[in-house]
Length: 268
Image (cartoon, rainbow, N blue to C red; front, side, top):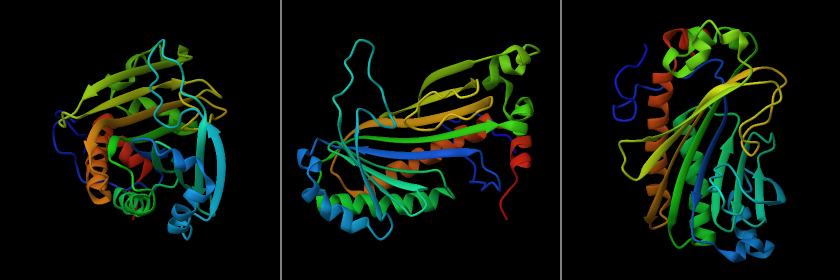
């Protein structure tokens, strides 16, 4: 049923697993004080061995930012750094490691519990092999994208307050619209960045997170993040990220309608 109340404060509903979820990417990132030795292949080898059974494919890349870019206006972009990408055989799950963060991402999300279990394995490996000094920041991001025939039904799938002009008679004239809202959550140490809107064909908001598609699309991009100053304890981090995920799900269910759940179907 449609969620009312305040999704930033109220407890969210029980997770409903969808048969055709429009969720295209989930990303968790844990930032820590820089470990310069991560740039060295020999140093990273122990981390690779700890996760290689699940992520056997390794690629080395040079990048400036990933997943959660928040460079302030007028601030210089960060210098390129080495990022190690560890992927499963299908390239549907990926671990990214750089000198200042470790991240887990997937385009094959099945459930909150499964994601947290996988994250715990990665963070324990990081703790045991890299020994980060502490946690500096946590981030969790869920990106939904609706396209094709589903997009034609967008006015019935999403509450009008979120759709904005898309919910009016002028919707057929919209080429591009994007709303970005920064929200406070019930946790004083974290915030929610919500992006919603219609994108024209071959356009994206953030190429580090999702690829463009050749048709009109509506996106819901929910990013919960917060600065931390805590010991790098894998179980504690997973607990925090799990709370972030529950908050994101509460907001998601507030955004969508009963017709959304019916249209995408509950998984048996």
